[in-house]
Image (cartoon, rainbow, N blue to C red; front, top):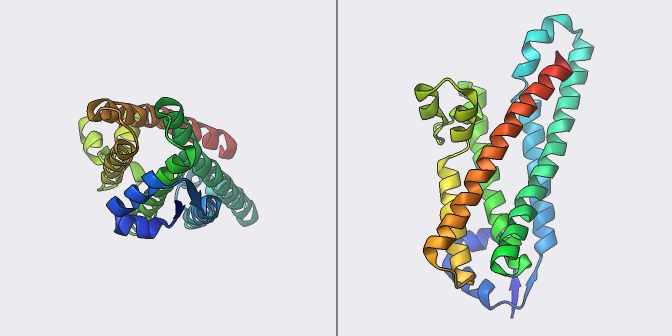
Amino acid sequence: MIYHNNLFKFLLSMDDHLFRIKQAEKIRHIWKVNGILLVCAILIYGWMAYLGMGTAILSPHIANLSPLEYEQQKFWFMIGRMVYATLFVGFVLFVPSLFYYALLGISLQKLIVMQQVVLLVMLAERLIWIPLAVFNGLDWYVSPFSFGIIASYLTEHVYFIYFFGMISLFQIWIIYFQVKYLRFLSDIRHQWLSFIVIGWHLFFWAIAAVFVFADQYLLSRWFG
């Protein structure tokens, strides 16, 4: 059986498509969908940079820059974000897929389909955040959809605010989806599967929060 990959149809009829993916011997359009998601991610991150999202680090130094120098730095910032988008897509699509493949022995192609859905939801979350940032001035870690805004009232420690800011309603849905998807394709007990998926996300959030710190430090050194 050949499964023709289509993420939007998958989301509209998940159980039916999960059954067909489980029975499939071959999956078509894997790389086509990967390419479309990559282009979408680059455009979204490039647009965010063009709108000035994430460029707050430049603000204290604007007075010391000529208009040309500022535009040059903003241009390179946008290029950097587009490169970041490429790395982000590669990480989301392949690193978790390889992890679950090594652990559960599920077909790598089928795991990549799972991660394509995950990436699509993550990009949708970033699109929703754009008007919140542009019109309300909200940083991603205090989005009303995340727990970062609650953490900011409980602690002033920036790392924990970043960490909990990564836990959003979208991320909770992703965990639910991954557990459901993997449970459908494997025989592992539900409790262990939930533990593995949640543990992976906790590890990812902890590491990503560290990278946010590093990102801010590198930007301050570059533009300072």
